[in-house]
Length: 437
Image (cartoon, rainbow, N blue to C red; front, side, top):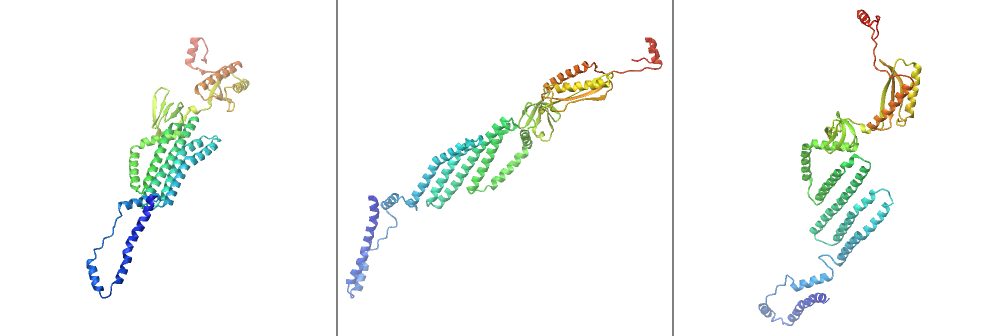
């Protein structure tokens, strides 16, 4: 306080000392008589000392006193006490909001999301809480600095720093949200056994890289730099890379088709481009099949989009078709009876799918048999189990035919010989011409 009083009193005293001589000069000149005015003026002009030049710079003491006065008055540069206090209050409010208000708001939102069965909303709130808190702090610092009267260069720097900081916080939130979305989709894909679960880590890294590049470009642009040349360079470089790695890119997109469309999975038995085998691996570049001969076939994934893929493991029910041939000695009445018995066999068998069609029909007069067509569907899609069902039903059908006194035909031929060859053959066997063999 003492220094403040000294700073206020000292300039006033100095002003009085400077004004005192100027007030006394007119009184002294009034007492001079008119006759001696000229001589007195000449003598005074000769004897008057040279004027002392005024000080153009303040002394060290004066500068120190002025700085102390500004400090005690909370005056910083051109900013008075009100601006400094307002700036400090804004910064303090931002810190409080960041520390408490954000915590309270997100705690309330977490209580709401816990009532839902969706697990995505809980994770996304946790992910964006940090970036939201940082955004409040960045905005508070910027507002507190804009209240102050700063030099133009510093104002411009503050604005650019605010833009860059806010973009960093926004893209930080995007990256954390991408992580949450990718993790949730991966878990769902694994639960539903989707093929895209294999490519989820790669898709996550690709999305993160894409947003990071976009963020860097926007930050550079908002700092006042031109990004046209940078984008042109990236375009030329990307074109060169694409031309050099077009086969790899085609294989990669083929693997994405396999992952999204899911025409097959590991362990399925498929036929692709005249190759049949069990799928052992679906990679980013190729798919590997293990054939029945135990050889390994590697097929580039770019062929998947253009080739027909036949998946035998996707069969839910196996179709069984067979033909039963009975002898020509079978009468029409016997045929009708045995057909009805065969239909009952299929209807009563629990391994036969009753929702699909079942066919038992007298189909054709064969070369050596009367043919009965039998078609049904086994309840299993597994090839080995379907063979077991086929065997079980075939034995039942065989017993049914034999129980009616009928016989299964086999290929036979009847030859009638005539002429000289027939007579000689008959004579050698003691028979008659027209021997039947």
